[in-house]
Length: 241
Ligand code: ZN
Image (cartoon, rainbow, N blue to C red; front, side):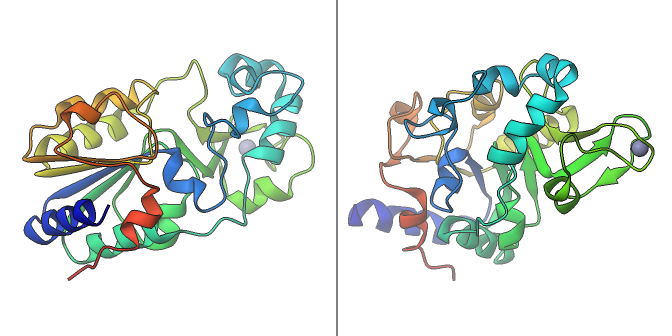
């Protein structure tokens, strides 16, 4: 792997318009379970399959059941940014990295200090009353008993893209722009299985595509640098200069 790390270091040294596109694998090293990996959320026992619980229809019909699962599995407040989050924030500060595009909803990139974070699937840190639109933070949701309600009585909905819901247009447009303008695109910690998010990387027309993922992805063949290692382990060896 030394050769691959050295090549990644070279690219990072050479370019100053890098974009990172990441998924669940970026957060697993912080202790957040991967939805789709073998020991991930999707293989855990619950009354309904997680795909059903995390759907718009289910949320509207059974907010109580939705929030039982959500409180339990989605509102993790013990995770800390790992080497990947921290290094990406450093790269942005150094003027090398222009955007982090993430499928994660856990706020770990912002906690690490990243500024331009495009959250394709929303964030558990933003929540809005469905009646009056008022904002409620993570801790309000964490401390709520049962279905979280606003002071006005309305039910609060997390700003997380549920199954059956579309992605936010402004976030998609900003992501497309960032990818289309990037010289280097680093795809990390994602198996590129979830659409439409995964389709965004088709807009890349820059110089180098890097894929860092433990398992194979459909884009491995297009990558001019492929590193099959955990992303935190890879980034911990990168020096920002
Ligand atoms: Zn309200």
